Structure formats: C-alpha cells, structure tokens
Length: 188
View 1 (cartoon, rainbow, N blue to C red):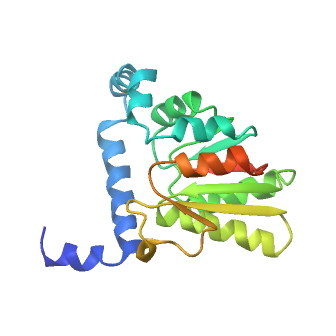
View 2: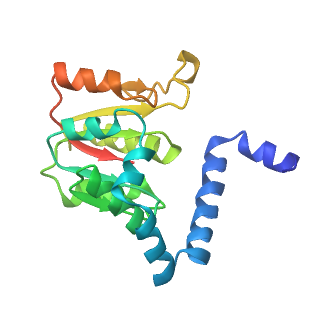
C-alpha cells in the first residue's frame, strides 16, 4: 500500500469507514447468492465457531442470563450461526450504522432499561456513546461498556468504556460470577 493508505489509516474513523465499505463491496460481489450462502452454512459449524472464539467468550455469554442482541456488520447467516451458539435472543446483521440501529432499538423497546455494550471498534464506541447519552437523558437506567482490546495495555485503554479487557475473557467472567451483573446486553 502507498503513502495515501498510511495517512488514511492513521485516522481510526476513516480507516473503519474504508474497511466497512470494502466489506460491503465484498458481500455484494461474492456473498449474495444461494450457492455462496450454502457454502458458508457448511463451513460455519458449531465446532468451527467454538474453535474460532477467544478464551472464555462462550462462558461469558452463558453467564449473562438475560436477553442478548448481536449487532454486527457481518451477513446474517454467519451472525445467526454465532448468535445461536452463544445464546443470543436476536441478531441484527449487516448493520453499517450500529449506533443508529441502537437508537431505533431503544426507542422501539423502551422496556429495556439496563444495557451492557461490548465491542472493539469505532462503531461499538459510538454505540457506547449513544447508551451513555440515553442514560444522561434518563431514558435508560444503566449502561456498562466493555472494550475488548487487541493488546490490553494501559496506553491502549478506551476511557469511554467502564471496563477494558483483553481477548481472554477469564477476568470478566470471574467478575460476573462473583459480582452482580443484571443488565440487557448488546454485543458486536
């Protein structure tokens, strides 16, 4: 890649926008027919999905005894496969604007009052911002943001999230098991 890409990728928002557009283009070109979807369904077996998860992820979701919704840019067959194995109540797939989708969800489902948002992207941070905004306006009662860092170093912590974890979910699982956590959950 040239210097233009290097300049572009220094801005995380622009980088994520480019990646999102590339993914959408890829889906439109290669994942839009029955044969492609069938091949994906064949590949994304329970065993494959479980092996692809970071340590403690499956336990993490099993510990959350509440309704869980998966908001993702990914296509529905893949999102649904993961959602099924991880016990999600619903899957909101192919969401290019996660924060806008979350706003719609909050407005249409005002009875959901306690949220956990877990994620690792700019779109997930925007969802966290939306939830904190609704909390400030007293439209929801509680929000806990969990940022999943590729390299959990203090210099890479996301201060806008209440909790920062690495890709091994063991510590947060212990917190859930031995602490109190009773909230609706939005995952990305």
